Image 1: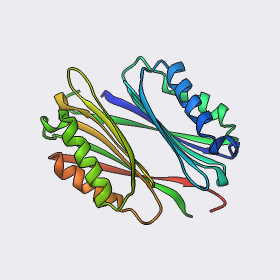
Image 2: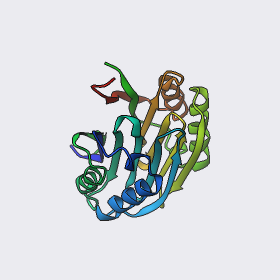
Image 3: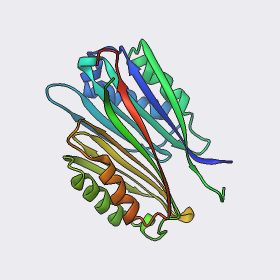
Image 4: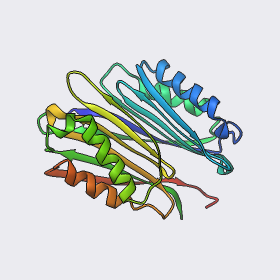
Length: 118
Length: 118
């Protein structure tokens, strides 16, 4: 039973609140995490919310990385969705957990695209 | 116990294979689904893969909608991540299921951001 994609849903709590509101920093670490994991970056889009919070996506040839932050709560939701065997999503996850200073985290792994024909 | 966000993961199988490779069509229905669900669209980014497949995101003020398609398998992975009570993610899901002609689908709902302080 093969899945087309692996989807990691990260719940990152008790993060460094300052960096959660720093769009440039978040863009940098998402791009770095994608590259370090072996992904090919195709594009990115980030948005700063007022009074606080950032949403950002990095589209990779192998799917995407997403972050939504709540700096006022020290919380970030991160998704790492990858296809194929050339990318190491767990490596990207570990980089983001470290860079955001998450003192408390959980990772849910979901298999996407489990098809009868696979 | 309140969650900051609601995340729907849609597995859409036995879809209309032609539309799964039609970037313009997919962009149109994701934007329409976001609007119909009551979301405020902030941006979008879509990529066409060769020989087939499309990845696309619509960033909304309330989080995001994502699609990855495998036209050759009739399969699409869709995420609808929303925050707050002003958006109806189930409505967006139903629109996408219908427009992609998915004869077989499942929806997994994940609560994101369940914090002790909530």
